[in-house]
Amino acid sequence: MNVMANKKLDWQTMEQLPVDAKLSEYQFHSVFVCPVSKEQSSDENPPMMMSCGHVLCKQTINKISKNGSKSSFKCPYCPTDVDISRCRQLHF
Image (tube, rainbow, N blue to C red):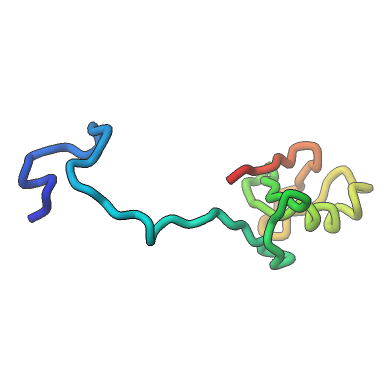
């Protein structure tokens, strides 16, 4: 039996759990690694979400689009034609 069931409390409606939870060992920094180039994202090479929802690093998108000379390119993971102007930077 767990603590919430014993107290007959619904954790979804609570602002704070009734028990202490030590999270120090479970705190991580968000890191994105481009699935195509296998490079870790950075301020100069941020993760970019394409219109299809897949995410690549900016440098990979530039390479696929021939340094921006093509206005669209095919996503390497699905059959979607991606418009470069619709790619958006993600912030973790």
